[in-house]
Structures are given as structure tokens and as C-alpha cells.
Image 1 (cartoon, helix red, strand yellow):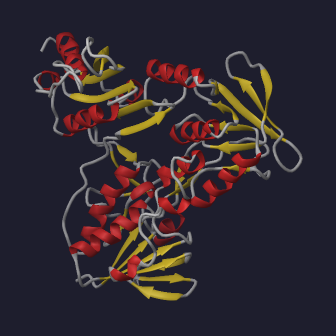
Image 2 (tube, rainbow, N blue to C red):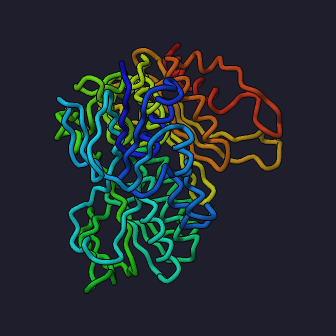
Image 3 (cartoon, one colour):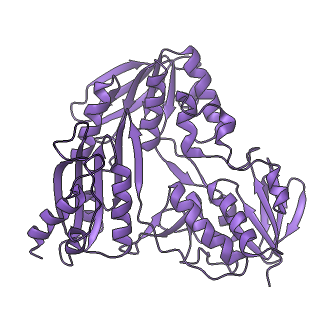
Length: 449
């Protein structure tokens, strides 16, 4: 019988796990430990504190520290767990020791720095914590030029934020295009053109080699990977957004198994190889939904769903996590970019032959003034016809259509079933044949279904 649950971490995963455990079991004792002094806050909202779209840093806090007590959850903020003895089921922290019956790791991830000279200078930042956002917002008040190294989601959202604050911003991306973990090259090119039209500078296929300056940056030395041309970009400060790695040190010391993605290996109950020890969120490895290949989450939506499962099971329940589809969305300079399931590159890596339905549609009928162009692709397993992925880029309604595709993947539908999907219709909102349905029709014909 579980009487005491300890959750290490108070981000989206840790907080959700504690809340779900409490909701399931009203009697169990629950304690949270968090190295940061803050209660749960939205990491995804951090770039928008810089741009001002979030009015105050405090607005990102999702659970006021005083509210934990009302839920009979003991929140230890700014307190690090230093050791765990799983045989005696005891943790060690700066204030003493505490026993547990079930333990949940929600230790998150940390910035993974690339091999670039000068990263130790002042005014070189990542964007992972509330303190990072506060420091970067202060930089925007005094700086004129910024270089963002990395053109993934965090890098691009941060670059947009600084541009909106009036800075001269350059994004340096090592790969041939930005956002390639999210969309294919042709879709990325549309996004790049849109961002550049708004004044953002993007250097693709370019390696950042050194951050120059005595104590703080004056410029960033970069090299084009194709031409090998070397140049310098002026920079008052630098943001490094080249990805993250799971925080697993404490779990490894405890004897928890680490998976191939370097996250804590979990099963469909979010349990590790140790009995009554769970992991969820950015520190955890689970499975890709379609192929059951080991996969890291890295998304807030995945974190809270894994945490729900971990929290309920730690409290005595028995629920399962279905796997990671990987639905992603962002908005840059008014353009929505959305993807779910496989990209073409992912399908090749997983050795899944795909057929795609690709088209340019519109969000409203051609005769209705104000409709926006929508570029979209849907992907289907060539052998089974099953929906395995989709991407959309447009100025409105991309995200909501993506949710339809994600549900379709989870429900194992094929191209014919998506083509038969009865979408709603009103000229002011959408067309009689939604672009999703039309893309499925194009793929259905190629599949001869």
C-alpha cells in the first residue's frame, strides 16, 4: 500500500504528477522537491515574456506556491535532492531525509551546449528557466544586436521576440533549414521566406565556430558549411538554442536504467526498471506511437500526459500511456507552423515507405474575402494506407486541423477514412471540402485505394 509519494521536479510533469496523484488518492502523503525556487510555470511561455505578449513574468506561474498546502502537498521549492537509497526507500536533501513508497522522477532537461569557443563569456545565454528569461528581457532593453545559435522551436521563437523588441537579430542554423525536427525542407523554406520578409536574418547550413570578445560577446564567427566561407556577425549578446538533454544523474545513481535516447527508460505505465519508481516529462524515454521505437518527449503536451499516468499509478492506480505522436505547433510573425507524426526524414529513418497528399488550399472558399492560403501535406504508409503524419503552414487554422490529424493517427485511420471525414462548412469559416480531405483524396488516388 502506498502511503508516501515523492516527486522530484515541479515543472509541467512534476506538478501534474503530484496533482493527479492527489486527485486519485485523497489520503496518500505527497511531497514535491524542486531545485528552482519557483513553483510550476510555463516554460513554453518564456519567449513571450521577452516580446511582451506575456505581460509579467509572474503571469507564467501556473500554481501559486501557497496553493500546494491547500491540496495537502508538501512543496519544497529551492530544495535539491542529493541522494537516494532505493533499498531503504529514502531520499537525502539539504534539510534532512525522507522515506517514500513511490518515487517519481520529473527532473526535466538542461541545455546541451555545442562545441563552440567562447560559450563561457558573460552575456551568453540559454533559454530554459524563468531566470534566463528575466536576464534576456533585460538584455533587450540595452542591446542592439543579437545572435541566436539554433533554428529550432526555441531558437526561432526567441529570435522573433527580440526582433519585436527592435533588435537586429541573426539566426545561425547548422542544418540546411530551420525547424527540420518539425517540418520538411519545402515547408521550412516557406517559413524562412516569411520570417525574412519581416526582417529576420537566417543563415542556414552555417556552423557557429567562436564567440569573440574579451569578457562578453562582440561578434560570432561562423562558417558556411557548403562554401566554407568564414564571416563575423556583430553581437551584443548570444542565445544558444541547440537543444537539450535529459537530466538523469540522480536517477542513474539510484540504479534506474537509461535508454537509447539518454532519457530514463519507462514502460507504458511510466514505470522504470525499479519497482514503484516512475519517470515522466523531458527526463523520460518512452515510445513513438506508430513504430514503438524508443523516443524522448520534449513537449509540454507529452509531459503532462505522461505525468498523469505516473501520478495515478504511483498513487495505486493502473493506467497506461499510449506513446508519443509528437504534435507540434508554433507561430512566427503571424504564420502558424504545425506538424504531427512522421516527417519525410523520420519515415526514412524508421524505414516506413510513405505516400503523401500535398496541396495548396485555402482556409475559406475562394469567393469569400479574407481567406488565407494554407500549404499542407498528409503522409500515409505506402503498404497499409494508414495515416502516419501531417504538416501545415498558414496564417490561420493550421493548429486546429493538426489536431484532427493527430487524432487520426491515434485512431489508426487510412486515406479513405480521412477522405470520408465529414467536415463542417460555412463560407465565413471553411470550405465544403476541407484541405485535409482534399489532401487525403490525392493520396488515396496514389495509393489506389
